[in-house]
Image (cartoon, rainbow, N blue to C red; front, top):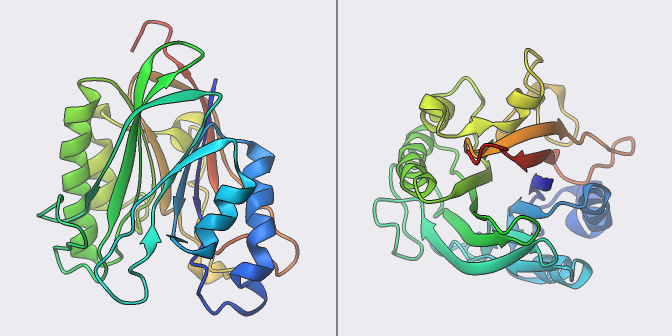
Length: 262
């Protein structure tokens, strides 16, 4: 069994009043520990005290992320991956930018407001000896940028999934009726873990804007290749009154390797 979580933890410098980072960082940690993922994709993590807090309190994980760059207050923001050392051996890591020049640090395209990254790792699963690639990302919020990034990621996923199993987590800033969702899940190359585990159920919202009913939307996805069978998937909507771990709920899944090898 492989346990996966995707969690937009909300930027540490955001002015969120009672839900500011220093007031909720222990709640973020508690949700991670409650599920205890083997693979964790995090969005809106700043490469400052926010990342250091996660590293210091999650020593059982290898942390890999790269600053998005591009200048401005979001320059140090990352979409890192955390990999449980006891579950996986890291073979190699890499990153690219969601743009027409993916190797150029800080680059952006398609009318994106911010530079955006994707961080990935090729891993050997210690329990089975099998290999997979795990990628985490955070799309821009401009419609043209979302579609451009979806097409770019689809092409990358198509090439990668021919070589090994693939897991993708992210905040895609688009719901499951979007062209971006259709792009990424076309032809069964990538499958939505939450929908597979909950057939016929409504798409559970992940973004909630600190409990605002008007903001609810399923924009965080967990996608897996055909190599995996999804055993369970859920959205963790835990909160304490008006206090939340983040303005997003984390999404989780438990998966197994397909018995036929996928």
